[in-house]
Amino acid sequence: MAATQRQDEHPPIEPRWLMPLLDVGLIFLAWVIGYILRYDWQVFRPVFDPSRAGFAPYLPYAALYTAMLLFIYHNSNLYRMRRGRSLFNEGTIIANGVTNATVILLAFYFLLQPLVTSRLMLVYVAAFTFLLLTLSRFIRRIILAYLRTKGIGVQRVLIAGMGEVGQAVLRTLVSRSELGYKVVGYLDDDPQRGEIDLGRVSGLGKLGNLTRVVRAHGIDVLIITLRWTQYDEILALARTAKRLGVEIRVVPDIFQLNLRQVNVENLDGIPLLGINVDSSLTGA
Image 1 (cartoon, rainbow, N blue to C red):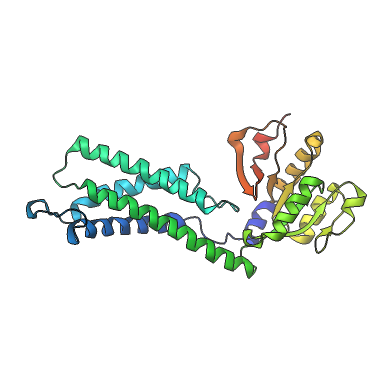
Image 2: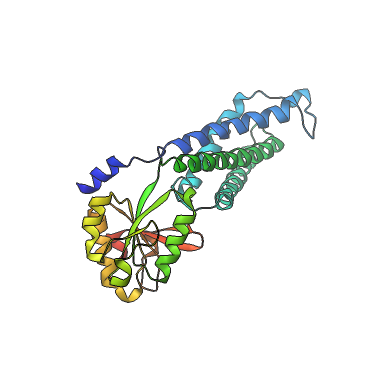
């Protein structure tokens, strides 16, 4: 019940369907541009009148191409919000998807031998699909960064453990405001750490204060930076956070994890693992 309430209190900054829907429109636009370049402007190679075709015969191929890209990008987690993921990484995913979909569609051309096809047009489509999808991600980053500077879409973070790793996470979060994280405070069982404020970031006491702190400060994300020797504490914190509806991120250590249940994010070189408590942390 608590998890449902917290999700309602903090709606996502953008609906999940937005980027897939935008991609559908941009991919179709790439097909239109490719057609214009090939048949209207005749870039690089002229088109003889008998070979000229309307756009309608290409619509089924455009639909197939779009479906393949959406499938590839969904499986590559392109549509999953990951803070800290670089534009280069997103561009690589987009390029791989475009390459695979283009090769598959060329294979369809070869096997089906349709009356109306243009391999050169497909090259134009692939190039503009990559350019438009990558440009949309660049613009999206600018918009999200601006919104986060206004406090929109910002997640309130609590750090568990303020050792060397915890301090590195804290420094990164404070210096990278465009990531959309606001560190509310931290917990540590060492009284020389847990009770002392670090600048504007408050020491909120021991790890056992997690429930009270989450409810009092409206925490959205718990980042656990404890050592692997504190496995029992990590498991207890993760279970409590899940019960409270708080997202869990763990700075990985050498304890065993089921990697299929792990969602990896990157925070300036510090890997953060989003975990499924029920399946990932069930044994050492």
